[in-house]
Amino acid sequence: MTLNRTLFRRMLVEEFRMHTSLFGVRRFLLFPVFVAVVVTASAWLLGLTGTAMETVVAGVHLLVFFFGLQVGTAGLVGRDAMRNVLGEMTLLVFSGRTLPVSRRRLLSVFLLKDLAYYFLFFLTPITAGFLPLVAVGELSAANLVVLWLSVTGTFGLGAATSLTLVGVLSRSQVAVLGIVAAVAAGIVAEGITLVSYTPYGAYLDQTVVGAVGGFLPFAVLLVVGPLAFEPTASRRVRRFESGRFDRLRSLGDGLTARPLLEITRSSGSVWKVVFSLGVLFGVAALLLDRVAVATRIEPSAGIAFGTLLALGTFTTYNWVTQFDEPREYLRYPVGMDAVFRGKRRAFLALSLPTGVAYLTLAAVWYPVVDLLVGLVVFPLVSVYVFGVTAYLTGLSANELLFDTALFALYGAALAVVATPLLVAALAHGSAPVPSLAVAVALSVVAAAVGAVLSRRVGVRWHSRLRTE
Image 1 (cartoon, one colour):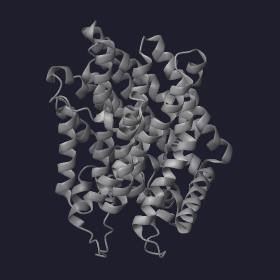
Image 2 (cartoon, rainbow, N blue to C red):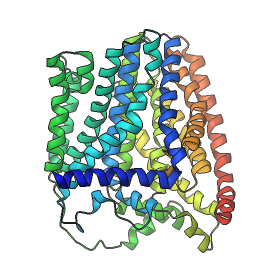
Image 3 (cartoon, helix red, strand yellow):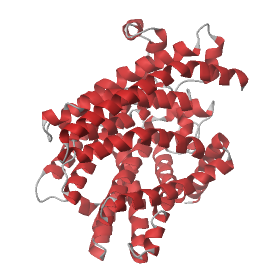
Image 4 (tube, one colour):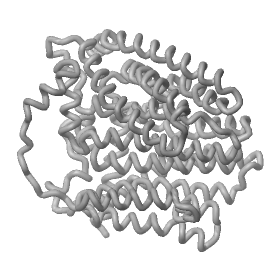
C-alpha cells in the first residue's frame, strides 16, 4: 500500500508538472474555469431551444464517457506521442522495464491517478457549470451532487473500458471482437438497457439498487483491466521495408510518406485513427437518437455525421504530427510549406477513407439517400479542420488541450462552421431543400477558408520557428 500511495502521489505531481511546464501555471489553471463557463453557456443555449434538462445531462454523460475512452487509450497506445512532446523522458506508467514494479501495478495506479486528476481539473468544472441551474431551480442541489458522482464514474467507466479492451487485445484479438459484438447486440436488442449498468443509470435511479447496478461494472473493470493486460516481452527487431516507403511515397513525396510510415510503425498503428473517428461516430449516432426521441425532430443524419466526423479529424492531425520536433525541419533543405503540404496529404489519406467507411456503416440504420450529403460535407469540412488546426497549432497539436486561450480560439473557429451545420441538420425535417443547400454552401466556403489557411501556414510557422 505504501508503494501504491507513493506511485499515486508521484504520478499526480508528474502530471501537474507536465501540464504547467507546457502551458504555464496561470494558463493551465484557467482551463477548469473555461470548462465551467462553456458548460453553463451550453446548458443555457440548449434551454433556449427547448431542450429538456434530462437531455442535456444525458449528453454530458455521453461525451464524458467517450472522453474517458480516449484518455484511457492515449495512456496506453499514445506513449510515442507523449515521448515526442516531452522529449527524452519516461513517464512512470511506462517505467516497468526500469523500475522493480510490475506493469500491472503501474497501470492500476495510473488509472486511479487519471480519475483523481481529471476529477479535479475537468469533471468537477463540468459539474460546477450546472450551479447556475441550481440557483434558478431547474436542478436540485441533491441531484447536482449525484450528477457529480455519476459524471466522474462515467469518465472512469470509459477509461477502464479502454484499458480492459487493450488488455484483452494483448491476449486475443478474437475475444475483443466477441466483446464488441456482444455489447453491440445488447444495445440493439429490444428489452436490454445497458444504461442501467452505468453510472448514468445510477443518476436516473437514485436508489441503493440503482447505485449498485450502476457502479458495480465500473468497479469490476477497474480490477479486470490491469489483470487482463499481458505485457509483451518480445524484443524483436522491427525491420524497415523499403517497398512500403516507396508505396507510401507514391501518394505524394517523402514528406507525405514519412508521417504515414511513422503511424503504421507506431503503437496502435492506423487502428488508433480508426478508433478516434469511431468514438465520434458513436457520439453522433447516440446524439441523433437522443435528439429524435427528446424533440420528435428527424435531423439529417448525413449532415450531422459529416460534420461531427470532420470535427473528429483533429485527432488524425494529432497523429500525423506526433513524432515531429518542429525546429528539426529548419536543418533540412525543404520549406515549411512543403512540410505542411506533406502533412495535409497524409491527413487526407488517413481521415477520408475512414470517415467514408463510417458513413457507409451508418447506412445500416439510416437511409442511404439521407447520408449522401455527408459524403459532401465530411471531406470539405475536414479540409477546414486541417487548415485551422495547422494554422493555429503548427506541428504541436498536442499542446492545444490545456492552453486555455488557444483552446478557446480553436473552439470558436470550429463552432463558426459546426453550429450552423448542426442547425441545418436539425432543420432538415421541416425544410429539407434549404437545409441541404445551406449545408453544402457552408461546407464549400469552409473548405475554401481551410485551403487558404493551408497555403499560409508554412510561411507563418517558418517565421515563428526562426524567431523562437
